Structure formats: structure tokens, C-alpha cells
Length: 160
Image (cartoon, rainbow, N blue to C red; front, top):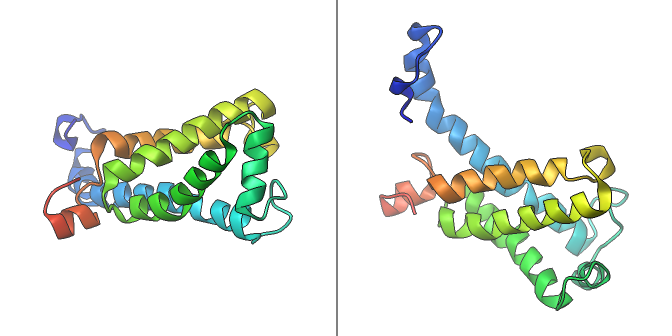
């Protein structure tokens, strides 16, 4: 839906909304992609000790996946690492947006499922709430592409 098709309570703000919409979309895309990087730094390199599960290596990630029944565990561990350190930042920049949003969405949707199964709903109990919200954000960019303010648009001239 185009913004001009949407009835506004204050029509005088329509121009402001139109001007800010691409920037709001770019900010959301940046946040969805970059939210994965600190998790990767914590899980794979041991940064941010005392936050979340005490895992600090790819081997530790693989062992977690093995315990939770994701096999082969090494495949899932390396998939998560690549998603967190490659696909996440690419999505944040809007570089190859749709192909990068796919593994991000898959990771977050599977994470939401796993957290729902083991941890319940609430984010402060490591529940489904947090990964499900970010999965919905990744799904938006998988469907809609990177938007006007993306590397895809600026470099390639179209939204990938």
C-alpha cells in the first residue's frame, strides 16, 4: 500500500511521513540484521560473559544443537555462525537483501520454535517473544526487499 492511499488523521503530516518512511525502513532493516552480531560474538567468541547461555565457541554451539536434537549439529552451528556474521550485516546494509533475509528469517523462526518449546513465551525467560518478533522483521525484508535506502538500490540500481 502506498502512503498516499492511506487515510491520515492529520493530512498535513503526509509529506513528513512520506519523507521519513524510507529512513524508518532502513533503520528497521539495520536493526534486524545487526541484532544478530552481538549474539554471534557471545556464542562463538566468548564476548559478553554472563549474558544468556554460557557458550563461547562454535563447538559449544554445536554441542547445544546436538543436545536439542538438531543433527548434524556441526551443520547447524556453522549455519548459525554464517548467518550471524555474514547474512546479518548484509541484511543490515541492504546488500543482497532478499537472499540474506532468507537465512536470517529461517534462523529466527527456528529459534522462536526452539524457545517456545523449551522456554515459554516471555523474552526475560529466553522465550519465543524476542526471536519471533525479529523473525517477523526479517520476513518483511524477505518479502519487500531492501527499500530505497539500501546498498542494493544505491549500487545495483534495483532492490535485490
